[in-house]
Image (cartoon, rainbow over all chains, first blue to last red; front, side, top):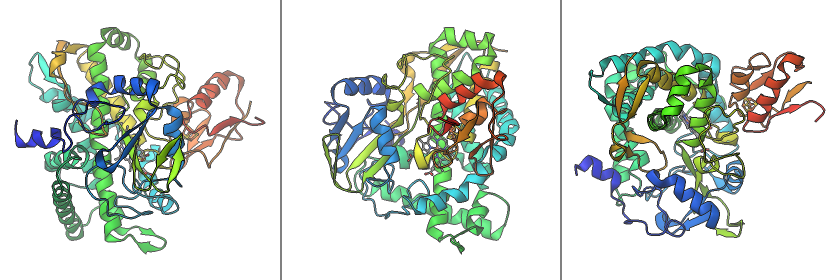
Length: 410
Length: 65
Ligand code: HEM
Ligand code: SF4
């Protein structure tokens, strides 16, 4: 195995034997089997615990996940990625505002960024996203088998966010490397994660300098020049928010596009129905977001307290699996079925409460246009071989390799 | 039927605006507003109920609820 792959799959802790008492969200078996693991836990142990990472809880019901998301007193966002690294950033600002921030600071850091991601600013991107999707398909060789994750899904969000931030498009591989280090490389020996953050920091330093030398209008310049409480943002705040914008939208969106295509490749009935009745797209996309919600967040316990009989202690980790909440039969009718015409779908793929995904309008646009365009160009396709699909490791769940056989081209 | 939005609960998921742009608008921060005084014409009642049922934050209500 190459070093690069190995970094993502070797856990400091070794394989998991029991998901209720020793789970590890970064075990390579977790994501491919997540739906079964959550269903088992929901029936037997709705708040699982593991000693890994210094102590981690895993609630799997909708009621518990939403209660924690809304309870910013007992649960801090100081770090939202469960890892072996020591968390140095302090509440209420954290290392990557606003995702790492708690009230009252959170409100101000978030409000700054809401206007550029509001629907009226995002909708005009549709044309460019569509052109990019067509271009990616044009560039695929005329082979029977194409990789919908590697050749398609992974490029779409990287391209858009690089343009929004004013970063070189040629650095896309570098960005995916950072995403891998930060979100997949969570259970490494001490020092490995810290070194990855230093590489990321050095890169940002260069980009910020480039924006000073060559001023231009983009989100990076906006963050460098805006104010909070009538003061410029601190350099740490500027860097933290840029890191967040760079990383939060990449593998999340890439996963949502990939999982939707994975579903259609394995469910010919749904693919044919969407081809025959395009009016189903809006409900179908929301249903894919519900069932294959890619993002599990985390919180750190802020005060010792009892949660449903669980003795939670300060600085314990709590995973917040919005995808598990979305599959809870107590909240959704026929929760384990994928119904592409589901009209009532109050899912929480983009979170709940004050941290609602700031990029959700952009993410929905990218997912909808990417999946629609793929189906428009390839009206029939199937998994080339289910055994060759490779799923991500860690809190963001989606296919990283997805070879599909194209059966018909438009 | 008349709709109201609880602006403390609304987090800007924009499900309402996507489902019923005849009834909802969004401000520059991405938070939802009812159009006019929120009165729903009879032919849009079904859409209004769909928006209520899809708001993840339970922020939309029928006035008088
Ligand atoms: C399908 C794709 C995506 C999904 C499923 C997703 C999901 C989420 C979730 C669940 C949260 C809540 C975090 C928490 O509760 O701690 C979140 C926050 C956030 N997301 Fe996304 N996201 C996606 C794409 C994007 C994109 C494209 C961007 C923008 C570039 C983005 C930017 C953010 C930011 C800035 C936050 C922090 C908001 C805050 O803390 O106030 N996301 N996302
Ligand atoms: S769906 Fe609910 S939370 Fe979302 S914008 Fe509408 S009212 Fe606000």
